[in-house]
Length: 343
Ligand SMILES: [Fe+2]
Image (cartoon, rainbow, N blue to C red; front, side):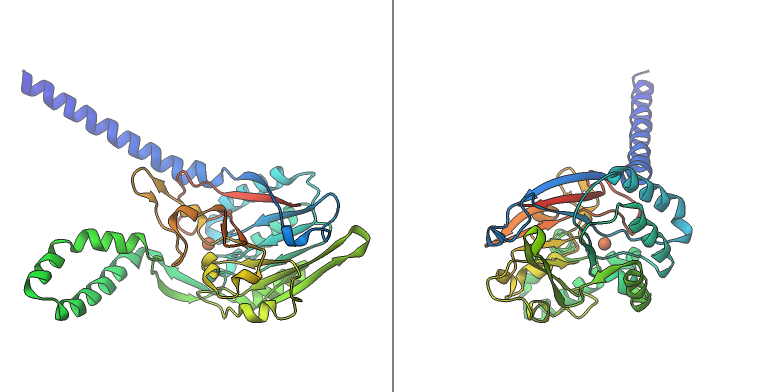
């Protein structure tokens, strides 16, 4: 009788666990990725004192739309409609998109639909490309690939280890592999190139100015605006040249930098930048109790700064969780767009 009751309890617990797991999976796939939020943020730029309009400068920051087109059209249209509703009637100055516009070439149409869905900015739209705008990857192969890389490094290290140290290394291999995965960008195999030239042309055709390792002078004397906006190419798949981005910016002039990948924060030229706007991390995309964010996809970004506002010296940095995702799951790291008010 007692054994029977225990079996009932065990079965019930198993069923409840499975139901909870299925519920979480449903939420992470069907609910959270579509629940885009509009975040509002005010940032002071000390070096821009007297060079911003009296009422401030409003930037609508989009990033990481990751549009696939075709297979994911209904989800992507739902996201576009959500952004349309969130931004309806919004009056602002600059629209910026910090890359990963597309996941595959077929996503370009939806990118243009997204840009059409937000009210036109008063002073212009600017963008930089991200790694996915250049390349697509087999992310499902990342963990086995990383295991092979890790094992190769272990074998090399074993050559230098004494017998006892080799035993110790073998005993701690799994936890050290887990730590390696946690702190290393997921290494999906490159499966092909996207047509970044065609994307660039489509965006320019729409009216977005692409800041490919260059800066533009935002100068409107009639409203008291006199700052620089720069962009740098993607750190992983592009040819980032921050020196070129900043070459035409006069010394002491305030400059905002668009960089898809926040790893740009380790550049020696960073102190020259007042504010970096980035994406790429998706806020970790999945945030689990105890483990924290699943990944940052960045090499030099502290895990606690996977999204949001922080400072590196005198340089201010804001990382958006972005709009989209490759693997269509988000958990406690929901998609967002951000209205930044510069004062
Ligand atoms: Fe991305």
